[in-house]
Amino acid sequence: MQTVLVIDDDAALRDTISLMLENEGFRPSLAADGRTGVKLALTQKPALILVDLRMPGLGGVEVCKQIRAAGQNTPLMVLSAIGDEMDKVLLLEIGADDYVVKPFGTRELLARIRALLRRSSAEETKVLAFGDVEVDLTRRVVTRRGEDLKLTRAEYNLLTYFLQNPDRVLSRDVILNSVWGYESFPNTRTVDAHVVHLRQKLERDASCPEHFLTVHGVGYRFLT
Amino acid sequence: MQTVLVIDDDAALRDTISLMLENEGFRPSLAADGRTGVKLALTQKPALILVDLRMPGLGGVEVCKQIRAAGQNTPLMVLSAIGDEMDKVLLLEIGADDYVVKPFGTRELLARIRALLRRSSAEETKVLAFGDVEVDLTRRVVTRRGEDLKLTRAEYNLLTYFLQNPDRVLSRDVILNSVWGYESFPNTRTVDAHVVHLRQKLERDASCPEHFLTVHGVGYRFLT
DNA sequence: CAACGTTTTTACAAATCCGTAACAAGACGT
DNA sequence: ACGTCTTGTTACGGATTTGTAAAAACGTTG
Image 1 (cartoon, rainbow over the protein chains, first blue to last red):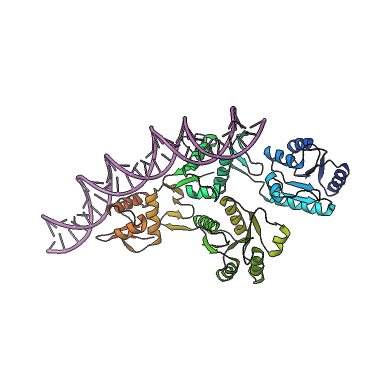
Image 2: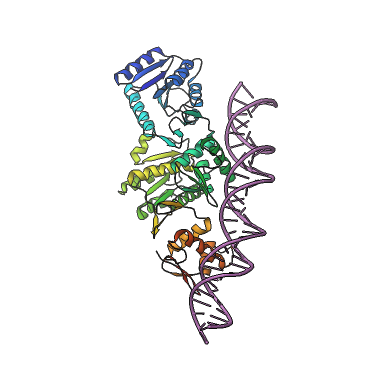
C-alpha cells in the first residue's frame, strides 16, 4: 500500500483528505505543521506528499525546499489558496511537481494524485548496477558494496549518462553537450577531471579502470 | 538513419539540437517557423518532431494540430519555456506525446527522444561485417570473433573508409584526402603503415591478406 | 563577508600515437 | 636474371593526448 503524506494546518481539510485517501486504498500520514511534515517525509519515505502552501511557522515553500535539499525526490503536490501568489517558476524552483487550487473537489485531487504517481512510477524505478556499484536513479543514491557513496552533482550526472549509454565510445564533445547542456561551454578537459573522480570513487583500481575506459584520441567508453 | 524535425525560431537552439542529433546518429531537419515546419513534417515524414511552443506566427499548438489533422501520427515532443502555460491536458488535446521545459540539458532531451522512438519503433544499429570482423559504427567498436579489438583513431578512420568503399581501387592520394582531410599533408607512405596495422589486427594471416589487398603501383583495394 | 564544497581550469608528467625514415622484400619490365 | 621501382615492416623522435593533482573560479550558506 502506498503512503501519502499530507502536510496542512487545517484539521478539517486534513481529515477530509485522509478519509478520501483511505477509501481509495492509500495509507494517509498526517502532519499539522511544516516541521513535523519534513520530519515525516524523511523518515517514512511516502510515495507522494501534499503540502499546503500557506502555513504558520514553516511554510510550504520551505517544506519543499528542505525535502528536496535532503535528496528526496518524492512527487510533491502543492495545495494553494486561490489568492496565493502562484508563480509557476517558483513552484519549479522549489521542486513541486503539481499544484491544486483550493477549494478543490476530492475527485479532482484524486485524479491528480493518480496522475502524479503514474508519472513518477513510470520514470523507471530501475536500479542500475555495474561491478560492485549500484545506482538508484529514482532516489539519486549511489552505493558501493552496500555503503552509500557521496557523488557531486556533476559526477552523478556524468555517471548516469554513462550508464544510459554503455558500451559506446563517447567523445568529449558529445558528453559535454549531453551532460552539461547547451548553455555552458566548459573546457573539454573538464570531462577528464570528472572521469578521474568517478574512477577514484567507483573503480576497484582507479589506475587500471574496468568500467570507465579511455579511447585514446576519441573519448571514453563505459562498460558495465 | 532516422530524421528528426526541429521546429524552433531560436537559431542558436536549433543549431545546438541539430549538432546533438548529428552526434547521436540522427539526421536533423530544421524549420525556423511553424509554417515551414508543418510543410516539412508532411513532406519528409520524419521519425520524430520537436516543436517549440512559443513561436511568432504559427505557434506550436497550431503546428501540432495541423500535423495531426493531416493524419500524421509521428511522435511529437513540445519544447516549452519555463513560464509558459503548461497545461498537460492541452498538450494531450493537441496530440503531443511528451514535453520538455527549457532550459534543458541535451542529455535529458536525448533520453526523451530515445524513449519516444523506442515506444514507436526500435532504434537501428549499423553493423558492418567482413571475414570474422564486425564493426559497429554507432558504438565505434570493432570486434573479432566476439572479442573487442583496440584500434587507434587513424586505424579506425581508415577502416571505416575502406568499409564504405569496398571492392574499389583506392589510390593513396585519394585515401589521404578522404581520411586525413585536406588540411594535413602526410607522406603517402603513412597510408601503407596503417594498412599494415589493419592487416595485423584484422586479417587471418597478415602476410597473405584476404581483405586489404595491394594494387601494385596504384593503391589498395578492400574486399568484404 | 568568510568558510566551505564544488566545478573548472591549469600545469606538468606519463602514456600513446603518428608520421617518417630506413631497410628488407617483393613486383615488374626488360 | 638483373636492375629498378614499389610495397612491407619495423623502429624511433616528436607531437598529441591523457592522468593527475593543485590552483583558481564559482556558488552557497550561515
